[in-house]
Length: 290
Image (tube, rainbow, N blue to C red; front, side, top):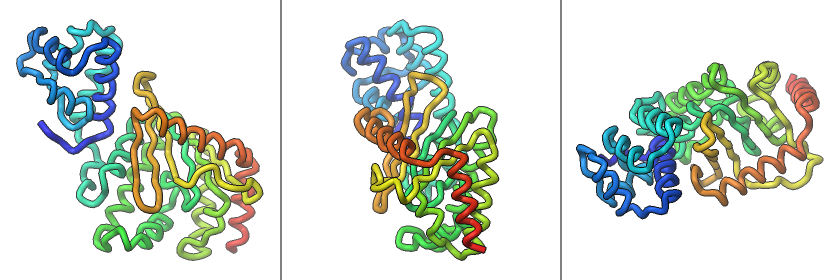
């Protein structure tokens, strides 16, 4: 059954592919083993390829036979079944798929499953930390890409994503932002004052750490905004959302892009102010808007 690619289906497919490759089996041989294990619905190599790409579902009986054929551990089997169950669940982000591209929908889905996030932003305040008024201005000014009738729903999607920060299963956000995002007037000085006050308030939460990349730090280590997600299970690895002026992308199993994004974040963090000094700078800039 074909479906719009989702973060969970891609993660499940990626783990299935990794386990198959670890067993040194091609897709045709793996499909034959699944069928030999007694699956009710026969598996073809082409269908397995779509499953591994996150474009088709694997049925419960097929997954059971995959687990049996490869003799995976009980822990891994439980993880695969849990991921399959969650991949079939409907998330709030699916209500917005008519107005957002696939990577943005997957951004919300990844954020819902991740236990930590690390972000680097040079253009605007990190979306998870924006006030509603600030978010409305950002979305409203993207008129080249956004229909006016969709603005309210896009802002609501951003507000929905922010709820994850308060979930018990979420461990923390480390947000690196350039000094420019503090000084760029979005909306009005009053709006910016409220936004910077909000940053200081959320940073009091042990789950949120903010670092500012000051003007004195020199050239930026990268030219894209990005978010790096980590997940509860080590086998899930990391996933990265990259946002540029012209496109958004998701990397989940591509090692080189993920390594490059991790380097960019680490380099930005290393040159940024410590958390306490960052909050002092935010407070100082906030006073300039009075």
